[in-house]
Length: 96
Image (tube, helix red, strand yellow):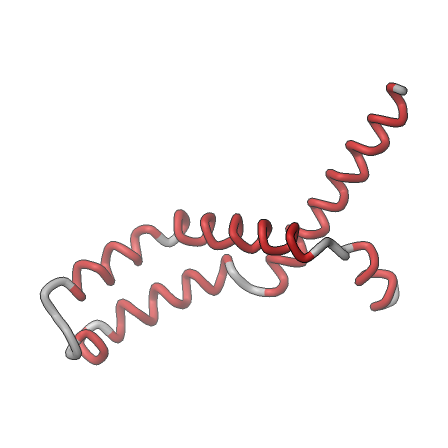
């Protein structure tokens, strides 16, 4: 499959893409809750020193979040969304 064809198949409106990004971020935060808690625990009571004292926890959190918030994840979500929309349209046509 060519790049142009794949791009057309995964094309969604900007508003829909923003909604998918929001869902992707929510899922990432849920999946990485353990790392978020560890970072928050480390950061409690600190100000500027949080940068170097919580570096390990911040890196772990960012690594986890990146697993769930990258371009390939978004493209997969777009693909699934388009398949779902196509399925709904086909069902609607079949029931008319």
